[in-house]
Length: 100
Ligand SMILES: [Zn+2]
Image (cartoon, rainbow, N blue to C red; front, side):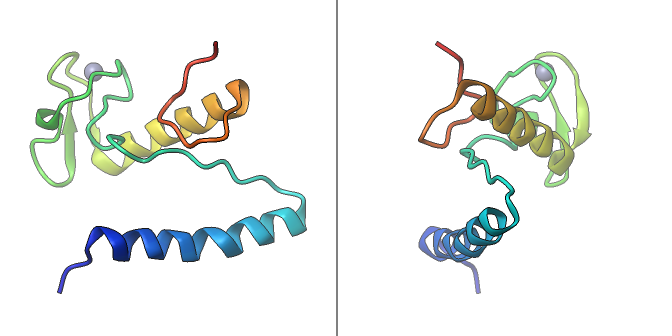
């Protein structure tokens, strides 16, 4: 049985609320970023393509040749997006927003 988009969104919302509470209680911070395309975006050059992911676990950029495990590549993109939100600010989650 697969999970549909609404189920997945509900799961993340249920995870996010206690995480925000716990982090505010501890004096920590939660940075929300948009996860869209993080597994298809090259963490080295930023090229976005479905073909960057030739297998379920392997990432290979068709533009620059960068290779990595897809989860490691996506984690680098999410970290960069989080840093961008912290530096540039923003109320809405974004994938690597640019400062204006
Ligand atoms: Zn690349």
